[in-house]
Length: 348
Image (cartoon, rainbow, N blue to C red; front, side, top):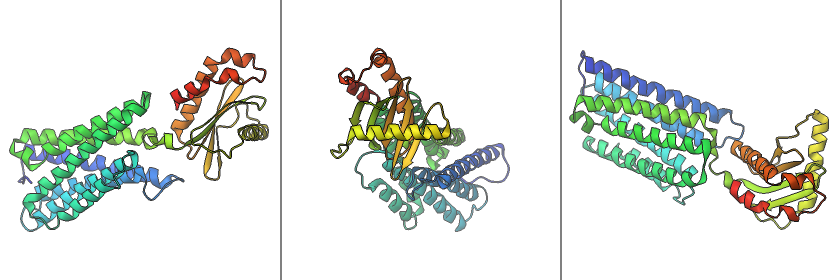
C-alpha cells in the first residue's frame, strides 16, 4: 500500500475520500442490519444481513488501509493492518457472493461463498505480495456474479424494478473500477488515478447502497416461487376464474372461492371497510386481495411480497379492462373467461 507522510494536499484529499468510504459503508451496514433486525419474517441467512456484512467489511477495509497508509507506516504493524484490510474486503465480497447465491437460481451450492471464505483465510498464510492478487481474483469473481445477476433479472423484471436493477449494476461497476484504481497498481500509475479510484469507490458505494436500501422489490426477485393459486371471484361469491401455479389436485376451487368470499364479507362487516381486505395471513400462507368494480382477485402465496400485491392489482386492472363488458352482463357462464389464462401468464 502507498505510504503518505504528514503534510501535503494530496494526503488530505486521500484521507477525506477514504473517510467518506468508511462513513457511507458503515451507514448502509447499519441501515441493512436495522431492516433485518426489525423484520418479523427475518431468517438467519437473510439477504439484508448479507448486505449489512458486505458494507461492514468495506468499512473495516478502509479503516485498516487508512491506519496503515497514514499512521502505522513501519513494520510489523503496517503489514498487520494491510492484512486485516484485505481480510475485511475479501470477507465483504464473500458476503456479496452469499447475497448473489440467494438471488440467483443457479445450483452453485454456495461454492462462490466458500471460495471467498477460503480466500479470506489464505491472507493469513500467504506472503504480503500475494494480498492484492488474491483480492483481485475474488473481485473478478464478484464482477462475474453481478453480470449473472443482470442476466437473470433482466428478462424477469420491468418498470421500476428493472430501473433499480440497472442502478444496482451501475453502482457496483463504478465501485469495482474504483476498487481497482485504489489499489497499489493504481497508485503506481499516478496520484490522479488513485484519487479517481477513491472517488469512484465512494460514488459506487452510495449508488449501490442507496438503491438496495430503498428498493425492497430487489429482495423479492424470487416472487415467482412464492405464488400458489389465483382466484377471480364475483362480488356475489361466484368463482369466475381459477389458476394453479403449483398443481394441487386436492383443492376444491369452488368451495375455496366461496370460503374466501365469506371471510372477506365477514371482515368487511366487522371493520366497516368500504374497500375490503388487502392481506390476510393464515398459518404458512398469505392471501393477497385486489378489488375491481364487481369482482375481487385473490392470490394465495407463501410470502406477502409487495411486488405480489402490485401484480395482483395490475392483473385486476387489466382483467377489468379486458372483460369489462362481460362483467357487466355476467349471468354465471364462465366460458367467456377462458382467455384469462393468457392474461395470467402475461402478468405472472
